[in-house]
Image (cartoon, rainbow, N blue to C red):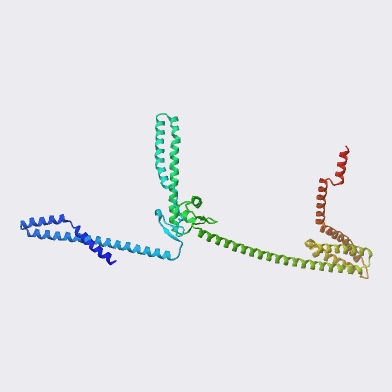
Amino acid sequence: MQNLWAEGRFRNKWWIMENIDNDDINREIERIKRSIDNMDMQSINESIGETVNKALGHAARNVEQAADRIGQTADRWRESQNAKSQQSAFQSTGSPYRYGTESGQGYRISKTRRTSICVPPKGRILGRIAMIFGGFWTILFASCMFMMATLGGASESLLLLPFAAIGLSAVIWGVGKVRRYSRYQSYVREMGGKPFVKTERLANATGKSLKYTLRDIRNMIRDGVFPSGRLSDEEDYLMLTSAVYEDYVRARDDMKRRQREEQENQDKTEREKLAQEEEKAADEKTKLLRETIRTGREYLRQIEEANDEIEAKEISEKLFRLQVVIDKIFYCVEQNPEKLSEIKQFMEYYLPTTLKLVNAYRNFCTQPVQGENITSAKAEIEKAIDTINSGFENLLDDLFRQDALDISTDIYVLENMLAREGLTENEFEKMRSGGEG
């Protein structure tokens, strides 16, 4: 730095002396001589002072300019030293890439294979040439068409339309090439030398929509602009190196594996929870079924005890018939637990009321005096028992209604299949009679 400063001082001294305006000094000396000749001392003093002031002003300005030049040189030297230190620090990290500025574009180049990860798209210069000559070609033939149409040859001017269209197509093609290169420059600037970038940022850098940017990037990858470029599955990231893409694939597979394991664990937990709930519901349903059957059997036992104490044969037979129907109802529900809900009203009202009527009839029979009221009440109970027997038999029949419907459906299907195969007796007779005819 001291040598640089000394060299600058030495060089600028001579630069200051060489840049003093000698013509001005000679003119002032001539003025002084003329003043001396005229013996005008005051004019001599003013001339000498003015000359000295001009020389000092020139010297001061030249010194300031030299100092500025030396300062700028020192700043460039410091920047070069900082750049070298940053480059050495970057290389010391062991990164497999270095920064390049080929064609004025910043991108990273592999140190090992020396292959760029960003290659400028071809056709920019050719595109500009196509724009220039295509525009000239279009204007030329469009002008010719206009002149011919003006002179009355409108139909003949249409013959030049294909040539004008060729020029216009060349302009459009050239504009596309130039704009593509401009978008590429915007992409590279937004990447900033990084091995991956969000596609949304690339879209914002060009002012295009995300859909347009993704299509443009896919085309550039296909054309080799990004030789190792890959888009993520969601197309939210552009990865420029194979190493980054491999890391992404591993991370993606690990994430999918974890999600799959989490989903499997969640499904397993839900299945276990559902199984527990179903088991609990089954246990509760089994418990309810057992409690219902036990209560129903208790009602039936009390009816049997009452029937044993009743001596009247007619009512006793009715009660015996009632016992048989009730027992079949409970047996059906016990064999088909899903029908438990169908006897809810039977258990909550019909059976307790029936037991109440039977006990009342038994109490009436034990009375020593059978008056009109007791006789009338007993007759009503006997009539009610007939109604109860009919109702309970209908309930038992309803419990088997679905089974009967299923059986009817099976029989209907079976008969139709046998008929199609010609295996029923009627079909055989038809075939036989048709053969004899």
